[in-house]
Image 1: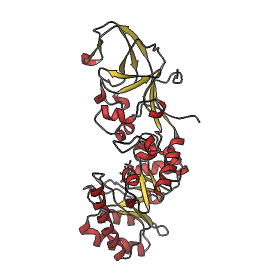
Image 2: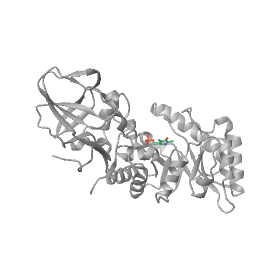
Image 3: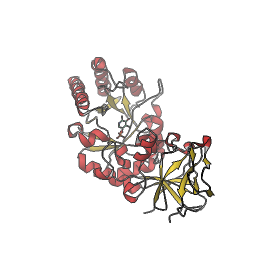
Image 4: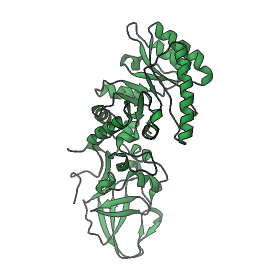
Amino acid sequence: MSRLAPGVLREAVIDTSAITQNTRHLRALTRVEVMAVVKADGYGHGAVRSAAAALAGGATRLGVTDVAEALQLRRGGIDAPILAWLHAPGASFDEAAALGVELGISSMDQLQRAAAAASADRPVGVHLKVETGLGRNGIAPEDFGAVFAEAARLERIGRLRVTGLFSHVSNASPDDDRAALARFREASEAASAVGLAPRVRHLAATQAAIDLPEMRLDCVRLGLGIYGLSPFDDRTPAELGLRPAMTLHASVAAVRRVPAGHGVSYSYTYRTDRDTTLALVPAGYADGVPRQASNAGPVVIGGRRFRVAGRIAMDQFVVDVGDAPVSVGDEAVLFGDATLGAPSAREWADAASTINYEIVTRIGPRVPRREAQR
Ligand SMILES: *Cc1c(COP(=O)(O)O)cnc(C)c1O
């Protein structure tokens, strides 16, 4: 039986080779440039290691939400192009410009602040973001004329380099996404009309990149897929040729034999129905194990599958293992690669009425990340 290293209560094991292979697979499938999205600490997998692994698999760009995340990658030694697309109101872009971070631009104000951060010998690289239906940020169609013309002027005088034009889609339906693509093409024509020629046009994240070839354009922004998870309700990672990179496991911290009728965890929402063994798993909602999955989340111990018994607490939960021979120190696997017998992040998502993105991304800072040995 598997065990964690002595002294380790819980950990997330990150298989960076899976990230590399997933990236390689999706790059071969889409046949366009891949921007690996490593925001939110690489969806909980570690931003720098995820970025390095994706670059090794053929990604040529990185995407993050905010400039602080981009700077963290630079400090971690990553020198590939990085795009950051959500900005604090009024913040200076000086540091981003100094470290060659490209900026997603959603307004005239951001455009001017980006230009203000340019130095005499180095224009700031920008990707203009256009609104195509999601109702979030992005330059509105009525502002295309003015913002694009100003971007073209700032490019001509050497303050900006307009590298990209992009938007983001809803995945509401293929038709909705195609409507966004049509709006994107209008934006693209409006940009060309004022003399802009962005080399990298990008619209699709993992779901559209896999399912809608016409959305791939010059580049796809892949998050979930590179971590080996499926954005589709009806297709597993294995069916997409992907391998989950994160395994969350913990070391059984206590076992207790109890009689029938014994209450378990806060509020006794679970009571034993026979003589049985309770195993204590030292991971709770502070670690990102969703309390919503109380009495539901799956756990594998010693190759057998169980369910959380009772409430998930801040630091721990209980599993009713019946008469299975479970001992202190045994490995309890919460999720990982289902083809290796682990529950999937998707099952936890279903148990908690959420999506697999949230399950991996919320694994908390108290959970050490360890890279899988190869
Ligand atoms: C998070 C994000 C992505 C990646 O989405 P996935 O579905 O994880 O591939 C791509 N583009 C933008 C703008 C994002 O915010």
